[in-house]
Image (cartoon, rainbow, N blue to C red; front, side, top):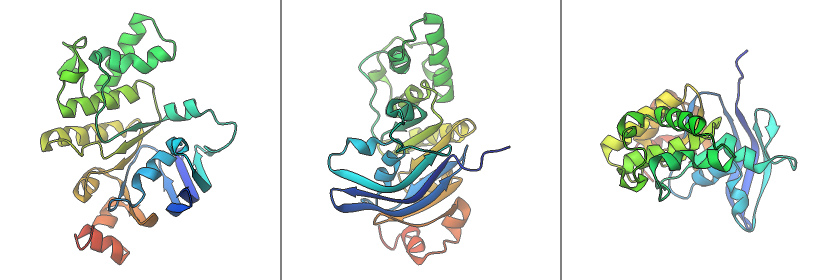
Length: 253
């Protein structure tokens, strides 16, 4: 039987010191879908993403109320293994950050940290991750050259491959195309559509147009509140809330 929801967020509030960043968020995220969270700057989008694998724990003075369930288990349960959670829910940031080493070593980095040293196994992991990130055909003849020599779009797909090598279940992407040209952006978007066969993807898109192109469902955040969420075609063609319509049509933002 198909699992209905991968992640369930219930009445979730997040605070930086005493300032609310997210207010009463209720959202269900299904397996093998691309969910776009869009809205103006400082609306809480990145905070929501980071909450899903508790990267927000690293912010001094922050706190939360409410619940986030991953496969029915509370990610804030004291017994949760944070390292394991962040392997299951991997995050790719807006600026690609390849390590100053070879393409191969970038992708194999996490596996080696986990204790995998057999060369044959590492070769399999690296090839599978690069193929999943739609980068293998472009780099397979230069795996042992510096990753820093790749183009911006290739570096971003390398960072996605580095996360995929850890075999996550959920991918969080925070404006992964913000610094890329249109051709590189199209490559990333095509990659995401292929990846959703195997992963649940939550993306903060670079703009509304990207959200409408890549997402199955979308949610509009404004001042820390989830104004509405639903199927992408409905959100972008027949939004139920006037604030969503005003933002999509460029009346503010």
